[in-house]
Amino acid sequence: MKCTDLYRRLSDHGEGLLDAGDCAAIEHHLRECAPCGELRRDLEALARLCRESPRPRLPDDVRRRIETLLRKSA
Amino acid sequence: MAEPFAAADREALSQALVEHGDRLYALALRVTRDPDLAGDAVQEAFATALQRIGAFRGESSLGTWLHRIVYNKAIDLLRHRGRQAPLPDEETAGGAEDERLASLPAWARPPDQLLYGAETRRALDEALGRLTPQQRAVFTLREMEGLTTDEVASVLELEPGAVRVHLHRARLRLRSLLGEHFKGGMVAS
Image (tube, rainbow over all chains, first blue to last red; front, side, top):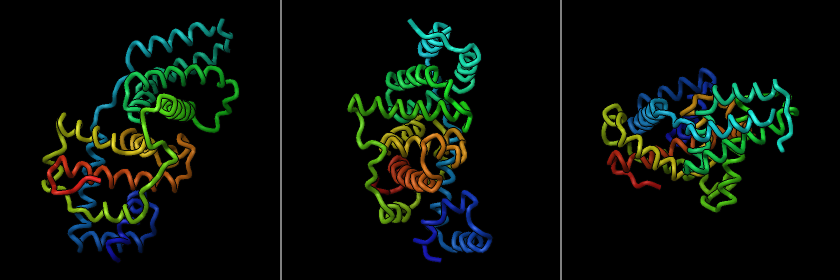
């Protein structure tokens, strides 16, 4: 497997879309190719950062306006 | 004078506001990058949902349906106010650009040493601002809100394959952009 093949297939691999043979080929390449292994490491770290980022909260004034809208529609 | 709506519909939307309000606002804020526009998008989305809920047939969950309305409102507001370009259907990068981004050198320091703290979160927010609104929406829903690819496709009315392409591209661009923050020697695109 070439690095360019891995670039195209890494996301599908992460989504579980590839068959066992393709997965094994990708895992083998990731073990053997340091830059591709680092690419995966960075992408996993990015995903972790995103999961741990706090979600912004709906401002109270907007929430109140929507509650009023729903109440007045009765 | 507002038209009266069925009590069950109003109750369903009130419950959705409790359950999904923060998520809907997060999507609107990450798409528009403007708290006022984001608040307007959510409020207008609930007004639209109130008008249309009688025709809602439950083919997706109410939460998914509301996310779709919020996303469309956010994009409409961006278009009307002319604050953001490119808009969702504009896509300039292709496979060759993806390959270039993927082949950039890794972050210089181990990510686990870098990822925690307000400064890094600010860098992520700034990097998200460099994506297209649609890439931001895909990335937010998939990576930050944890929706499945099929759910993201339903919200954004895209094919799952298109969601995967946008997500892959967003990940590569963010890696490149954050590389600058992490001083990994990359040139951000």
